[in-house]
Length: 491
Ligand code: AMP
Image (cartoon, rainbow, N blue to C red; front, top):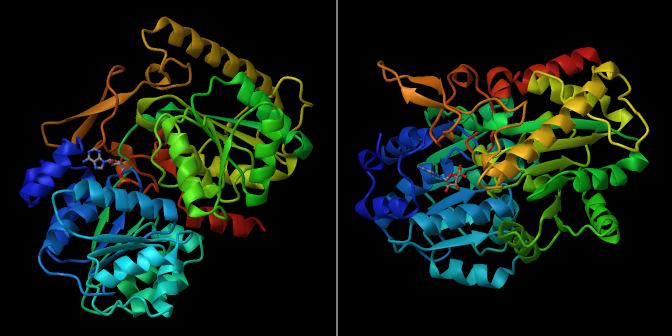
C-alpha cells in the first residue's frame, strides 16, 4: 500500500515525502483510514512502529476545517513523559509544515507563562502530560468541554507511572461525543478496562514487531557483589568498543553518584532522570543525540520512546525489577540493523528479577565473568557455573571476531558488523504469491520498517519497530499476566 491510497491531502503527502518515508508502516495502513472514518481505535503498538504518524497525519487533515477558541484546544494528545510529548510535538511540526495549525506542548519543568499565553490565543492541538494539564485546568486556564479528539498514547506506561487516575479525570472533563484513540504496547486487564470505559465501539488494531533487527542484540549478565558494581561497570566501559551507551539505574539518587564516580575515574558521562528540570533534560538528550556525550546515565525515563540512533551498548547498572523494563531498555540498542550489546550487572540478591527476565526472553542470558572480580553467582540461579567460563571465552572470541571484521571492512561503523558468532543472519521478506510475507535469508539487506515476522504475528508481543527485539523474543514472549500468575503461585 502507498501513502496516496490512504486519503491524505496533497500537503500531507508532500510532508511525508519530505520526511523520507516511502511507504506507510502497518499501523499507518490500518489506522489512518479508520481515523478518517471517525471511529475510535484501540491500538496495540509500540513506539517505533510509526504510530505517531498514524494518528498525527489524519488528525492534521481533519483539523484543517474549523478554528480554535481561546483556552479550548480542539485535540488533545496525552503522553506519559515529557520526552515523548516533545517528540510527538516535533512530529506534529514535521508532518504539519504545510498546514497552518497551532499546537502547544504542556509539560512540567517549563514555565507556565508561555504555555498560558499560547492557550489564551486558542490552539488546535495540545500535547500534554496528564499532571501539567490538570494543573492548568485547576487554575482555570484550560477548558476541555469542546475537545473532540483525544489520543491516549502509551497507556500501559501511564499505568506503570500511576497516571491512570489523572487520565480518568481528564477524560471526564471532555465531551462524550469525541473521537478517542488509545495506544498501548501491551494490553493488561487494567488497560482493557479503561478502553471499555473511554472508547466507543473501537476498531482494534494490533501490529507485531516489524523487524528482525532485534537479532543483533547480544545479552550478557555479570554477577558481582554490590560494592563492586561501579568498578565492574568501569571495567566493561573500558573493555567494550562503545559508540554511544545508556547506563540504566533503578534509583534516581544513584544516577548522580555514579556520574560523579565515573568522572573521578576519568570517564565522562551525562545524566538524565525525572527530577531534572525539563530544559536540562532536553539539552542532555540533544548532546547525546549529537554525539557530544558518549555515555548517558539514566533512569527508565530514557527507556521508552527515545529515538536516538547508533546506541551500541546498554548497561543495566541495576537489574530492572520489571522484566518489561528490561525489554524497553535493551530496545534502545541494536537498532536499524546495527549490532547492539546489552550488559546487565546483577548482585546475588537479584536472582528473582533475573529469573523473570530469563522467562520473558525464553532463555537464560549468557553469563560472563569480569577479569579481576571474585567469582559470584546468583543465590538461586538457573545458570550453570560450568557454563560460565565457556560463555566468557565465547564472548571474548565474539568480540575479537567482531573487531577483526570491523577493521577489515571498508567502514568501521558498527552498523555493518553482523559478524559476531551469535548474531543470526539478517532476513528480509518478499511477498509470496498469496500476498503473504515469506522470509528469505539475505545477509546483505537490512530489515525495512514495515516488516512483520510471521512467527510474531501469532502472539501479541509487546514490541515495536524501534524496539528491536531478538527473534526468539518475538516468538515466545509469555504474557506478563502469565509470568505474574506463575510468580504469585511460587510465593
Ligand atoms: P514512532 O513509532 O511514531 O515513534 O516512529 C518511529 C520512527 O519511525 C520515527 O523516527 C519516525 O520518523 C519513523 N517513521 C514513521 N513512519 C515512517 C514510515 N512510514 N517510513 C519510515 N519511517 C517512518
